[in-house]
Image: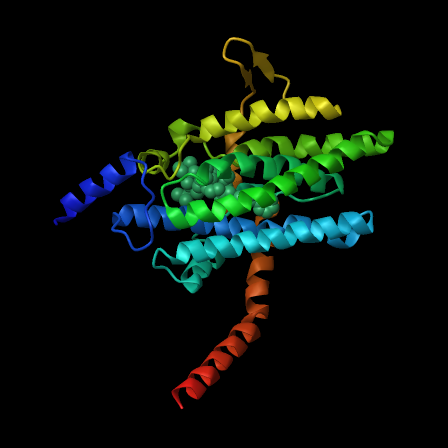
Length: 312
Ligand code: BYC
């Protein structure tokens, strides 16, 4: 079959809602777009351990510490599932890490904001994992099998993360005046960056048309952002948190919340390396890579020894 015929068959499979597997024929651009998006997702999970890792030693009780430790470990696991899923697209882990460590590949904008108070553990769980669930529940039905399957398990764990974050904030909101203020101040800082996680407006999103056509994305950036807002506003009201957007208003006709303008200048600054913590996050990951050299060398030496024994 010619390349054109193969592509036509591929598009027909996508239109029928079939799942594409690693060994199936796929257009080169489908493969490279998936590598871009999946590897960036994996890097985000790994970088995402840093802001919360910052609070493990300062969690206010043994129970909170155990829960936070489990959550941060879950994020490492998510990174590993997604790296493994991406490797099925004929790219090595080394190549992906190389792209990340040299700044060629991105990671989610949200992790370039600092975690200044304990309440930030609540805001990250509630808002950041909440946004991730909305995005990833859709990805669990995407056209590429290995990515979709990784998302099913990840979403289950993200649900636990979301609830623990909401519970931290709900507890603070039932506490002293200082605790309520700490919760509110944290949400004030994280609300807008959480909305930016969904990416630029649809009209400014260069990759969306390909990804929607191939059913990698099932919904546009703005659609998912709106879904997140609609779900989250009533949750904020339930615990007495005010979202920092004076223009947030329910429209009974559309049955959606209208919202104020997102600061896209801030978004582009952050994704282009000029956020508050970009340098710190990259340094932490580069240092971790160098410090992990001996582990890779030891694993390599062990593998060689086993191969020699097998061959003998
Ligand atoms: N941050 O054409 P667009 C987690 C980039 S971790 C940074 O709309 P696309 C968690 C975009 O990459 C979960 N960059 O792109 C972990 C592109 O640049 P390049 C993270 C962003 O791919 C620990 C350019 O802007 N989730 O949950 O169609 C603790 C144009 O954008 C961002 C995922 O990774 C951003 N927010 O759509 C707690 C989900 N937005 O590549 C929680 C998987 C856009 O041309 N990814 N850019 O240099 C996706 O769903 C999509 O890739 C996006 C962007 C919706 C993010």
